[in-house]
Length: 284
Length: 247
Image (cartoon, rainbow over all chains, first blue to last red; front, side, top):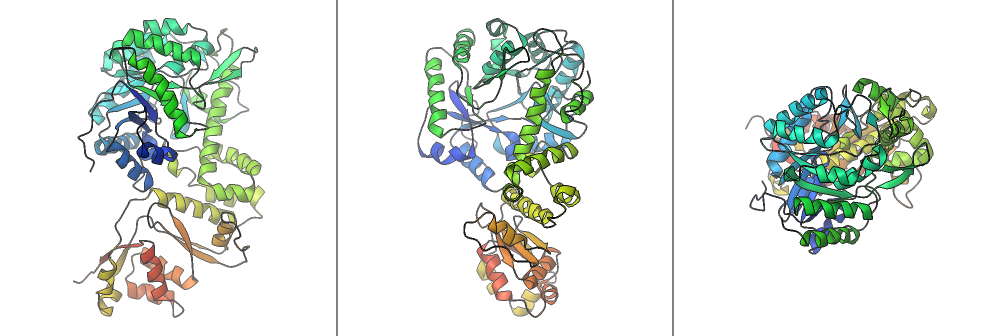
């Protein structure tokens, strides 16, 4: 059993996505990173090194548990076995926070390992709200829902993403995870105004912010198509959007995500130091 | 647009982009849909590459990626817990015509699956050596040994341990044709495969089937070196308990 005396909330300071290769560096010396986020699905084994590392980390850091496989936007019922695994992990770990995505990833008993898009319609709203109610009931805690990065739009959409997220939060009582890089990527790819999105966002519902890197690719007409790669530093315009987010919503726990071509720990800690500098300038 | 249509088109590159998906000009989003298609194929191929590094070395990166592309479309994961993805790969390889001339591949894939399962298996404290040493011969023979959750046994008609070793350790001897049994043990956090004699393979198979030590010894036959097998199990934390029926 873990010692549960550590903070039960995420501090409004920088955090980092945990990668096992960084474990020795994280444990060896303090850094600007004050909390860690883990992907829930990587800790659903029975034992061994992953859970031993998590136990050691959790004794020192507040942990944010981030699901990448619950398929909250799925047309079918939530995977009861997966929800049970999540509850088991939550009960053992007592994370400071649990979050998942506004997306779907499973259909008809196959898991597609990507965060797939949803049409923002009244029918989707009802389905997603029902699934979030179920998750919050089973886990016995409030969750945060994250805005996705998008590559395409749906002809059938009835409302914009901010309206959709605000209504989900109103119906379910869930909080929101604002991924500022996703806003920038989606705004470029779908042709909306990223600053307008940030300025209309319900910041009082935001429990956590994500920052990550994206890569430029080309659309069929030769214009930039941005890919949410999490494989490089946070881009300058995303830092600018983040600074505006902090002005509007105050200091929030802010995660640096780096999932592909993962660099040495000091590079991640350097990104966290940039976030710390911006966070220091605003009140919580 | 239903997720069923979306899923079918994701997994089949020859399938048309589903209708109703638009880019920023409001025109059909073929290039955009390709991003999702690519994410699915690339990420699941990467999961297989991580899970089967030796198989990949044997087949070559290019062939492995092509094979993974066929496999992931026939057997997409059924769970979001990808640490166990690829359980059907041995059976798939058995039926996959391009590798029909490499009949040892399914067992090599089984070995790599066993290493991964062992890595994530439950922790269990080894039985203190004194507990076994303190038993009379009669009680030891009648007992059933509880083996570690991280222990795995592979028995193959192919030299699967030697093939694995030749492709993962520098200067390992080249494989020679022979049936091989091997035992995966996880003394701490890192699973290690050990070559077994055929007799030790039979002994462990009987123990894993829940037979008492005496029956396992009968199954192993007179060639079996019990002391050597017990020493191997002890070094690898392989015995975690003892069940004595009649006491």
